[in-house]
Amino acid sequence: MKTFESLNPATGEVVGVFPITSAKEVNEVVARANSAAEQWSRLSFRKRLVVLKDWASLLTKEINTAAEIIHRETGKPVSDATLETALAIEHISWAAKFSSKVLGSQSRPSGLLMFNMSAQVQRVPYGTVGVIGPWNYPIFTPMGSIAYALAAGNTVVFKPSEFTPAIGVWLEQCWQRIAPFSGIFTVVTGDAETGVALTKSNVGKISFTGSTRTAKKVAAACAENMTPVVLECGGKDPVLIDRDADIKKAAEVTLWHAMSNAGQSCIGAERVYVHKDVADVFTKSIVEMAQKLKPGYEDGANYGPATMPSQLKVIKSHIDDAVKRGGEYLIGDKNSVKDGYVQPVILRNVPEDSKAMTEETFGPTLVINTVRHMDEAVDLANATSYGLGAAVWSKRNGKKIASLLNCGMVSINSAFSFAAIASVPFGGVKDSGYGRIHGAEGLLEFTYPRTIVKTKFNIPLQFTTFQRTGFADKTIVRIVNLLHRRRIR
Ligand code: NAD
Image (cartoon, rainbow, N blue to C red; front, side, top):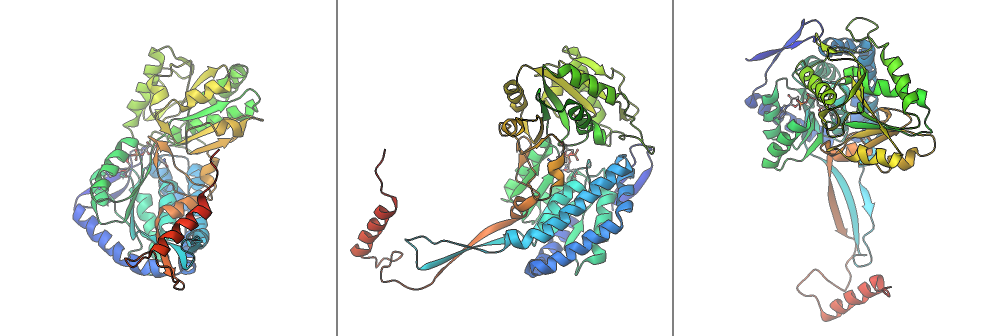
């Protein structure tokens, strides 16, 4: 059996050794999950709720263990790992609690033409959902698919990132302790090849979270079998700061928005567009606070190393390109990327077509560009191939500005907050992907609608038959006239 190691990015220590699951083994796991799905989908919402609540409760009891594993595998501070786990638990609980309300059968009006029929829409789980996860929030991010898919009556086969297999395997071990029978939630470890095998297996749906580059390959593989797919990809999130904003708060929260988790957040702030009237105050305030940040692995560090060492080259190339093209360092210099860590980098006046403004940097870096008015900020915010999240800082015009942004989620006078509100959908547009996790939309995503109509009573006029009479034809025209004919203005 082939194996791989999960390494602590801060110390190089081996966190664990895990199997590279082969395509044959993936297919066997999916076959078992498919047969478990028959039983799991037949349970009532209430019975699934009890199982999922037990899981949430066990994870709550074991939250420190989860945080410690995430800390060792990603290098992020224990407190960040704890927060991430707490939010994942909140999503399990919400999905379980609201599944019956969102997914219960609905009666629909049948209309005058079909008044003798009843009409109903049922929501049907897909069977097995294959979840492919990233490493940056290795429990929170995949849980947005896992919890909602399970609550909707699917079984799940989860392939965690090759950088964070230990937390995935631990999640499965916790599940086994409360599972009513086997095959409902299974983890397959491995690298890209294992992910490819899952996309080609006999799953009913794939939910992928990761880079846009991989997402395109996943979508292409799924297209071969007509497997539906949710794609949660990268972003280049903008922060728009109006002149009436609480500037001190905006600076404090935007610094965290950009640099927490070492900037490795799909919804992390990467670009700031600040109104010229408040640009100096904002810049001074954020730079002062950024100077106090301490990256490291020890207790009290604000953020950890780059989890995936190859990203360091990308971050450096974006900074170098920005500076070469006229951007100025407000904090940081050409030596900010070294020894596995990135010191805080804030740049200003960076050309809008440079890599630091168009491609996902995924590091603790931020560009601050000044705008003359908020219309310009909106235009620049929208001028990107991504469309995941955004933040707006304004006392009076927050909602107005937010409604002009081409993206899936906007927080006003806060950052990241939509990810922690389980009732609202999470996802993007354009290169940031399609489909939604979280909220009612997240539950609906993991089911398809099945329409059931039934004859309540027979009427003398029959339309769906070769025996249809001229009188029936005239009646149809009469009804259509009654319903839809009006004078056109
Ligand atoms: P990645 O695309 O390199 O890998 C993601 C997962 O896909 C991994 O498990 C990997 O093994 C697997 N994989 C790789 N090639 C595959 C293939 N051909 N077929 C199937 N699976 C394959 O991404 P990453 O580096 O792990 O994660 C970082 C990216 O994820 C960033 O772009 C970030 O913005 C994005 N992200 C998005 C969200 C969101 O909700 N929108 C959340 C977190 C991270």
